[in-house]
Image (cartoon, rainbow, N blue to C red; front, side, top):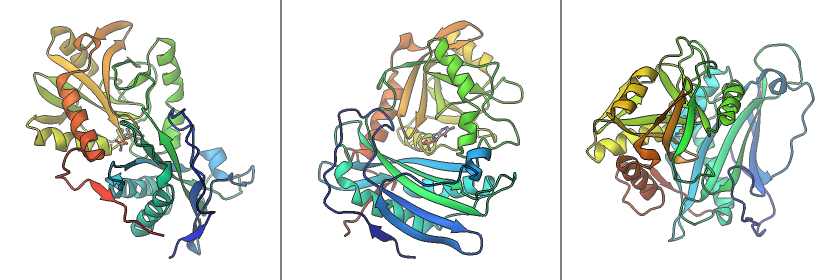
Length: 356
Ligand SMILES: *Cc1c(COP(=O)(O)O)cnc(C)c1O
């Protein structure tokens, strides 16, 4: 299937100063539709514009939606690159299957990403920490109110020039471990990147902010005992010099940054262990000084050091609220690869070949 090009070339980007996450968009988008008997059709890169949807559209009522978040970078030598995009494509289709939605052909998805990112290359900010955030999503578009999975879908990709995800930048954040709310439950869709998981995390995130915290730290949905993740990030901590991350037990998203941290850390000589970690064990480790660093990781922020956690109204401060050495080392390594300053020996960088 060939992607149609239907936008005015040579438009000048208007990247404002405000690169707060997800507030500015480029002037183009990719769009493609699906019908049960036809499969995917009409793939097009076109002007960024609103959709026209029936108020009865399925996704608006029953949340059958999935998405991906990834980034493109423009290197000093002018090359435009993406970071492990094939992993996002694979995970998108895993999410699709979990949410009873059709898969997107991997090659077509990649071609759509490359075509759109290349078309938007002049929109990619080049300063340290800046990038083009790429949001692919799929929604059920049947105009019916019956509760069932759709037979019509829309797939789209939009791009947003961004700076750092958190207002704090690469500075430690404070988080609240919720023992009242849960993000996902066993047997639920915690492993799918779906808006539904975010809807159920809003209330907890609001209470976190009321407590002066940036985000909520989610515990497992059954016993509220084991650490799972921060809203948009997987977590790691350093215990006696070793990196520990919660094991993927079903409710945790399979983060690509998480995987990159594991691979890069081992390569740097750190040992990494994946296991269940209870919140009480964690708090005791911070108190006794065994746990010396804690960070979240995800595409948007890459790595975000955590300086303090609140659990059952008690505060646990990690590393005097400073970014730890190992956290910094891993951050420098991964961002070094992403910005072309460190050799990519893992094959994570995909250079977008110049095209029409
Ligand atoms: C996207 C996401 C992450 C991070 O995944 P990356 O692939 O590293 O960006 C972590 N947790 C949740 C719930 C997410 O949606």
